[in-house]
Image 1: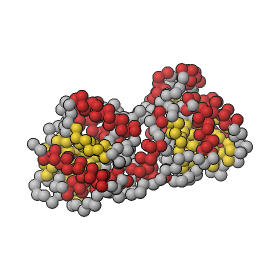
Image 2 (image 1 turned 120 degrees about the vertical axis):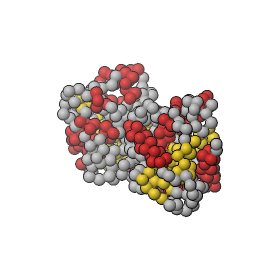
Image 3 (image 1 turned 45 degrees about the horizontal axis):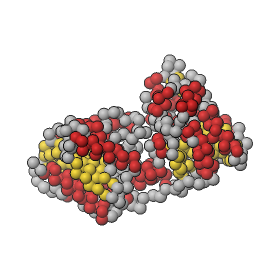
Image 4 (image 1 turned 90 degrees about the vertical axis):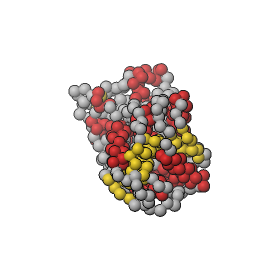
Length: 483
């Protein structure tokens, strides 16, 4: 017999699982729904001990731990301390914390501890404030009233104390349950595995399965029957499996190395041509891990783009900016601005002919340049970009919204490469951007790649994608040469 230990997110308790627990018990499973300590002074280790005690009290030999939202932190800590009992961990609309991560860096509302009282307790949300923590899609008025009525304060120490693990969170069978109305789905995870930061490659492990629920962030209240069914399937080792990309880390064009110089966070790939040359600064996406190796400017994608542009006669520049989390866009924007100043100050660069080329989540960093472009900015290029903060990117500063910034009539020419197989959430932000650009009369040159995925440079090696990269580069350089 399998036992389920259910651990919910902040401000809630075992009551939130009532309907799910009833259905699981009807199937013959043993169920324990956790109500974690909420007294002043409680920290993450207290909650880990709470979950470990529940595991110790379960009669069944095999325990499936389910962590929702913040609940994945004490779940992973308890699984690390009771490895012989825990046969599976289920991430229910939760982040992917690692050893050393505090929940505050991963929860949907990173400002939550600012509201803590003198006792260190954070008051629970009420009414529409629950939307800060995730989509309330599917919740009835009665369910929202229930959240308001039964919610309790959350000790701030549970959110600020780092998680400590002795091994990998994925050392055991794992299931991810994604709530699509909250912005994530299997397609998004597939994209991250194929073209995102290297830490996501672990999700292609055959021991990891995925399910989707077409509801918001609280499926235990909005879709309890469907969630119970999914948990039973997860315990039976069902679920969608991902596959690793066919061409990991290999740039789709065969481009020779160019002379390369490093200036702090900035790299310059130099052309053969003499005299000040126009330059293209490539701005990577994210968020990325600060421990990612190689860093973006040393990855095959950005080495490839910079070398290709240098081979065409311009300076190809790359920057490692510090977009490590959704709240880091202001810091990353400062890093990009600093790199631009270094680039324009180099005597081999024509300071009046600069293009900025943004990728993926780095697309949001284009907003300030689109809103108030300097005279030397001859082109803004965007490749499979995110051009408005998705619903679940609540930590993004509001000024990083290119779909609003492009409404400025002075926006420079734009070269936008659009992947036909883009994730629907990201594709939606591009359509929002194009609509706004059209109303503003902005000049947008589209490079469509119908059969390409997000990050296609290293996963889709076709004539179509090779042509798209070369076409986009030549159009950007054409803008630099014009006028």
